[in-house]
Image 1 (cartoon, rainbow, N blue to C red):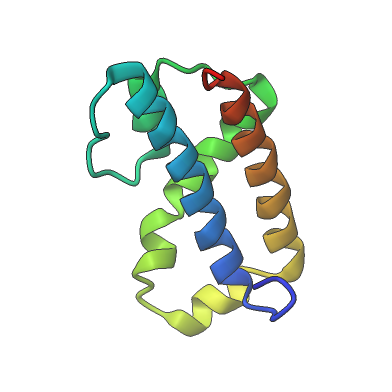
Image 2 (tube, helix red, strand yellow; image 1 turned 60 degrees about the vertical axis):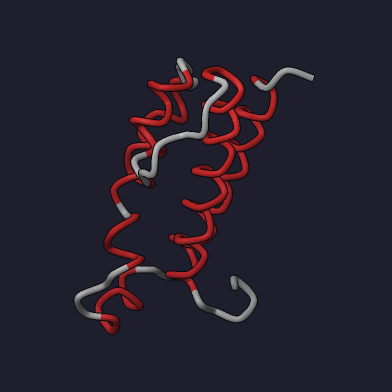
Length: 107
C-alpha cells in the first residue's frame, strides 16, 4: 500500500497488525477468544501488557484512528491527512509494537 501511495490504507493495516498481535496475547493470557473490539488500549489491559514508554503514545494514537480510517465521513479529507511521511511513521511504529508483542508471547 505504501508503494501504491494508498497512505490511509497503510495506517489501517498497521492498526490491524497491532490489533491481531494483541488478540494473540489476549488469547494466550485468558485462554478465550478476545472480545470483538478495535480498542488497542482495552486489548492491552486484557492481555495484562504494559508497553514500553516509547510505544504508549503511538498505541493510543493508532487506537484512535480505527473508526476514522474504517468509516471515513469524508474520504478526500482522509486521504489528504495521511501523507507518505505519516504512513511511514505508522508503519515503523506498528513494526516496533508488533515485534514487542511477539517477544511477549510464549515460545
